[in-house]
Image (tube, rainbow, N blue to C red; front, side, top):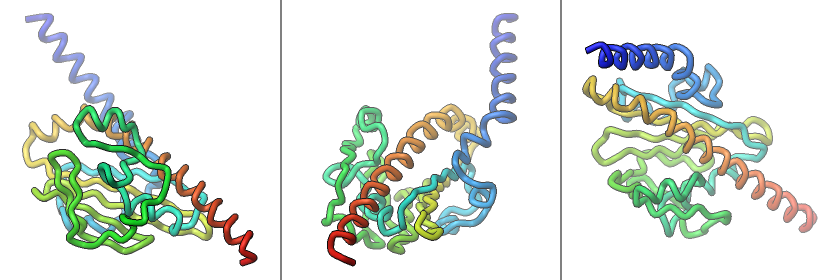
Length: 211
């Protein structure tokens, strides 16, 4: 019994340390306190969520250069998720992150659905250059992107809300939280890099045209 008791004790201590020292920064990476605690578009689609992450990044580009990458997100032939494709594809998601704007996917509409593996996501709110909100068909997951333009820069905020109706579900999600940060951090940086390149290209084109 003693070895088992030791394992349980160590696991409990690790859980306490995770909650106390790490969990908040993992769930709110990059977000300001105001961003992490404020209401965002899409919150109303899943009230009383059992799990919430709010992550954000600053982008040196206007919202017009960020929006195209959000608009075309999704599995091939869409633009991918700008994260680690090889990890995504281990789960059969068929993600092929592109470095170009795909004109055929630049006009998302409410009601359109996009498959993320077994999750079929429906576009619930679309406000070009400001808000894109998706909800899973079972209603247990809402993923919202919000663009806040600040001068020539943009804050990109990504919020995930999950319904976790049981204690087992709430415990089971804990080991997944650090992994979700790894993937979402890569995604946010991927969008930032692409948007800043696009912004530079737009500025160069405007300058060359004498605008």
